[in-house]
Length: 155
Image (tube, rainbow, N blue to C red; front, top):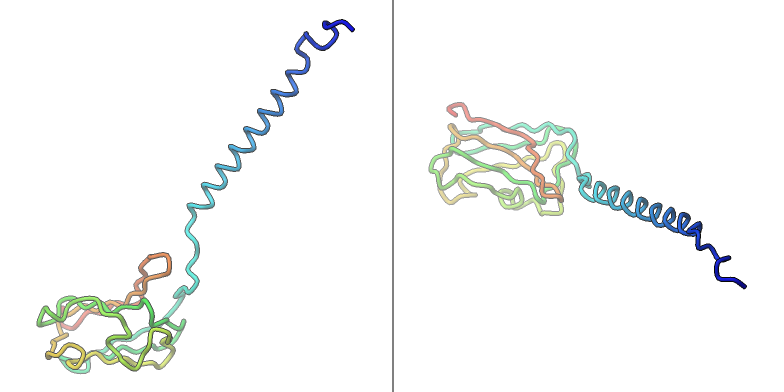
């Protein structure tokens, strides 16, 4: 056999280059799709879709938080944020389970659940008339969702 018979004309190179290019395009496409999917925000497993909260001032030193209806609010990762109260030492972010000892982190606030915030929670007599109160929930992805906001009559 003559060595010139076995494709010295380069005809076998074109299919090999074509296959390598197809594999490269497939890998590039898969990497692009993978990067896009991994950067997408995953939905919260426990979203708060609709909730009706009411905060009322029962006196200058007592607030009543009441769940009036809608989605049950998990106590875990739900906080009461107080700003502008007097004395200022009362201002801060408090886990819902700490302002009401009857609630545990595993509980959910459902319709008609009431939480009272007063001097027994702080060891001092707070004045909430000029305060702003915000109920927030931190999702499992670290996003903060405001559930309800309230401003005192003098805020």
